[in-house]
Length: 438
Ligand code: GLU
Ligand code: MG
Image (cartoon, rainbow, N blue to C red):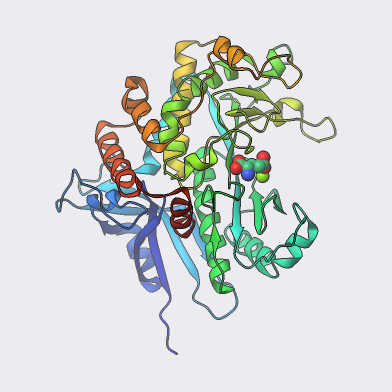
């Protein structure tokens, strides 16, 4: 059969989907110069296949301009079409950046963190997902046999990632039947998000070629374990030195990192609207699911809003270099640029407000996990529904200021429309529907 190689320019929108336009690869150089046309209302697509009431209506035009550093170009070697796409920034027709460009929300948040606080962030995403082709057996949690039973998926997926310049840190069978986890080493924020998006697409692309599907949805069914997206972060100064760690700080947290984390925790209930942005997100953020139910800083605690991760004396890198924090109230139904922009802005607010380092919750602390103790420490239960998270966002003037007013308007309208569509669905229906989408 005849075939013309095709390349696409894409972006990830509010609904957490990668969308864009393709063209013959033969005109790639021309397209890299000119971009491809786009429409403002496209950012109002919901993950449920509808368009939310749009502040843009049928009007206006935009351009998607590719970032040459955000390219996926993979030949699976099975005769199927190559996966060839670039992730893009969104521009106005006059060449200025669009206020609702998700990538630019993160770029400007990271730039402000550097300019206003002299801090850069290094970020690593840890993804969990289910693969439909891995028939599990009772008791195979984290089992080698789990990896064996998913056949060629793992190695093909890793090869596809390799062709995109992504070298995973680890790949393993997870707790759930047919659940797997993949993580990659720290990167600067924009690259980390690009890689997270490419990784999800490569997982889908691999599964599709094997006549199966993957799902990164936060909860596949009310009976299953959740799919977390854990966002590892560390702080670095302008000279490129690690500044998260201070051996004299509480559980090793430096004063600078303490302010950053205090900001993230202070604004966590409201930024959940960005980091856990769908109704199904809140079927995961419940106690005793090893996810995150509280706005707490936990020392090596996998149920804290933010976990202080372990360091190992046996590693070649220093404790200061290894020291990092894991934001756990996040999932892959979010657009990572928006998610991380909100976290960066909250951390920067904490730095500017000079907030004190939160007292880390430690397993051995007597009574640390009681309601009274949480109240004393200012720890709150995270929103229990998307509606509550959107209300928390809408009620928080500081967090609303984390994004341009036009984006905030579009975001709230989009998410409220999604909520209205799903408001009468049972937990089973919510899980079923979103497991197909993500
Ligand atoms: N599956 C858990 C979650 O939903 C995470 C398990 C782990 O700590 O790896 O976040
Ligand atoms: Mg895990």
